[in-house]
Image 1 (cartoon, each protein chain N blue to C red):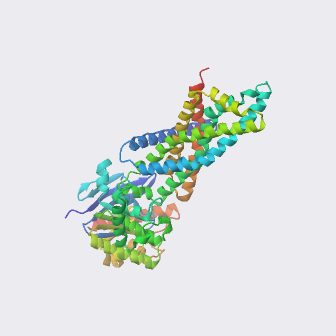
Image 2: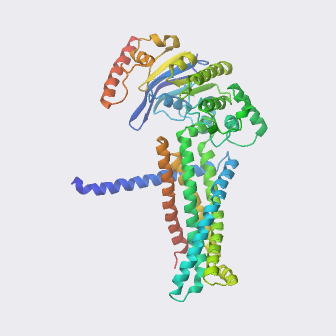
Image 3: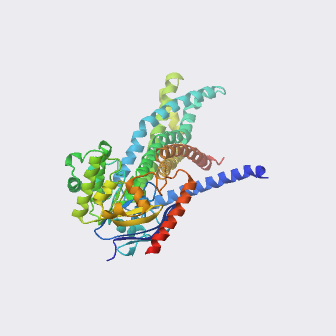
Length: 262
Length: 276
């Protein structure tokens, strides 16, 4: 009998475990936001995080966008040839980039860079009692450490994604005009013609959500890490993996909500 | 006289691990108490319960006779403003330069107050024997002993009434350890604070303490003046201060041994309390 029930018990335990984790993260997020919205504020910490998350991510995000935009243009051209639709390259490239690949790829790159760094930094602060020290020095660790990171992540990712979108389109443009024989003047005109305001808005909404996810996962896992160096390592891995999964999950949900009506 | 700090039957468990099992302790104003005990006997947890970093499962923590273990928000902040804590590893903020660390209790993390705060930071650095040349260094650029001193400067910067020192000499060479001991003795005297130090360094304990208490298995099993430390007649204290592997205290290698040991201890404590 026990052997029969074992798989169900396992599924149940896992299910409850996931629900409990979702609950813990939600409580952490809500209480962090509430605290971060009340003074004292730490504008210097916020600006430092803007710099760390946004500015320092520009090179890697720009490169990713340029390569992806170019590869996308090439693939759409090859695919389009099959039904004589090579001319759709500018339109499809910009839509795919702005709606999906720009925000998702930028967020994944930032997650790799930033969620891991946040988890490692906060985890080390936890292990070396720096977080306890903040409390004894009458500084709320959540307001001081987590608030600025959450706000900076949420606000800076849209800017980063905007840059990624532009660079991605330019990557496609460069490849299409250099290799595929597109007209230099027409390509960008066509791109602009097919791009709608709603595409850009949804791109920025996605970016803000992803930015929040990255900062939240980095903070949550770092803040709650325990067990010395090994625990910090685990927190870093968990922060990156959970950011990736949540970014892709929320991307799907936003896509279905924003574009799902046929 | 009302004790500055009083713990009454404080209990704290983490999961199934009972760390504090009824701690009773009093510290008089201006007194320097040293709590000795092996690793993992709950010394740090005791301090964290008094600071309000941890909430006891049971029991009371009184500061000047006022219950503090259930404080939250602003009241908890006010409570903490009376304490300065030297953490075991220093716990300096490695994202900030030394002087910002030392000024942290005054700025509470906000920028600004530049020249004035810097002057006050340098003043406190001078109290622990460090010159202004270290002010712009990062904590990671300092040696262990220097980090401890900077941490000490930070702990005293807001002139707390009560100081806690968590293993102040651990990881330091004997000379640097003695420098830190001297600093603690001087600061306690000059700033007229009540001090609680936890350590397993007996040289340090003898130098710093007015009174010594020994924590074992989550309880204070002995306390008294430091001169009596070597003639207590308590087999546990005796084994600890003589540093012998054989005796009533056994290192936790097997769980069975610990249970038996706990029974022995209970008998001993009953005998002691019965005598009173």
